[in-house]
Each structure stands twice: as structure tokens, then as C-alpha cells.
Length: 267
Image 1 (cartoon, rainbow, N blue to C red):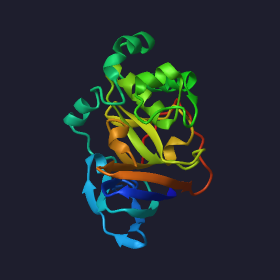
Image 2: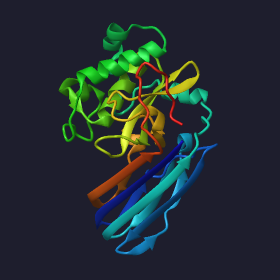
Image 3: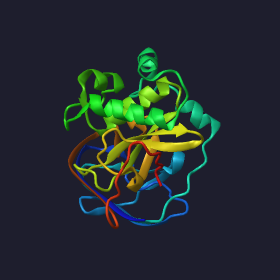
Image 4: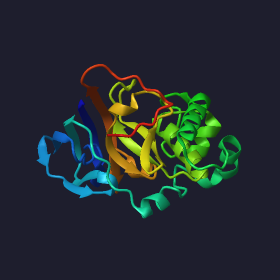
């Protein structure tokens, strides 16, 4: 499988700040990855420091003064990645409630809807279909600080909202679950995409209740508890206006058909 992805950002730095970006693809052991990443402020190149986070996530950070910031990234991924090891701490961490996936508020509700049995392929299909049927995908309908509870009550959201609700429900029935930021060939509208992963029978399986892109073509960027760990840009201390963001993701050949009843892993 050959996939090509890219991202370009244009932002005005209003006050000096420290910026972090998660737009480079995560480490893909076993796959061939070629990439380029550049940052410039008013045309002057910036050298970013790379921080290696959990699950192969790569964070690029630097201090930025006032001016216009241009960010460009592109990568080609050939082949499929080998799964990274899962630790006991991972399984503990991804059962806990988090900022945007408040699993503790769903214990009774999720048990009523899905029972108290351990994870299975049928459970993932049930949760994915349940969330997909109860939410309406509506850009601009949610606030960046909304969590799974607000999403369920409003009945609308975007991909991160779908992922948070899926994760909260799975954790509430004692299945380790996490959020993954991905490049998603075939996604419409094209953007940075968010999906959920659940730990089933010793393997992380992807759940995308939006059904906006084939799961088998997804390219991992960042993995964490929720969107607080996977945002494509973080601003610490100053003021930034994001003027525009362009994302592309392409897979060689025909887009595969995605069957929600099948178990799929991000590779």
C-alpha cells in the first residue's frame, strides 16, 4: 500500500509564544517513509525540536515571535507498519476517564445499552453503529472544549466528538480505548481526522463512527487519551490566529470498501 499525505498551515503570531505541532506521521516501523517538514516565520526558516511521545507520536516545538508563520509537511508511506508494544500501563491509562472522554459519567448508561461483557468484535460494531446513528456530522456545531457528555446531549459534532463518545462508552464497559489523529484518504470533507482505537483480544482495533474514510488506509499521526493529547497545533503562552489549514491524503489504487463488522487495525 502506498499513501501520500500533506498538510499546510498559515497562522499569524500576535504575541510571542511557544508552539507545538503534531502533523508529522508517527513512527511506522516496517514501512518505508519519506517526508519533509518546514517552518518559517516571515520567510525565515525555523528549526524545530522533535519530542518523541507515546506510541511513536512526534511533537515538533519551537518558540515563535510575532509574524506570519508558514508550515508545510508532506510524506509518502509505502507498506504497512508493525504494531508497537502495548504496556500494562497503557491498558490501565486507557480505561480511565479523561478530559474529553468522561467514562465515569457513562457507567450506568453504557451498561444498559451494551451490557457488562468484555470487549468483542460485536461490541465494537454495536458502539460504532450506535454512535453513528445518534449523532449528526455537522462542522462548526461543537465547541473545542466539549466532551462526550455535551456531544451526546447535542446530538451533533465532528470527528473528534464522535471519537470521544466512542472512547467514553467503551471505557465505561471496561474496554481500553484511546483517540488517534490520522490522515484519512477518502475523507470528505478532507481534514485532519480523529478516530478511536479499542484493545480487543490483545490487538488495537480502529473504530470510526463517522464512516468518512476507509479504516484500512488511515495513517497514524498522534495517539492519546483524547484530543488534548492529539491536537495538530498547541499554543502555550501567546496569541495565534490560524488563518488557513490544507490537508491532503491519497492512497494508490481504488479506495477499499469499509465493512464496520470487520476488525481493522491502523497500519
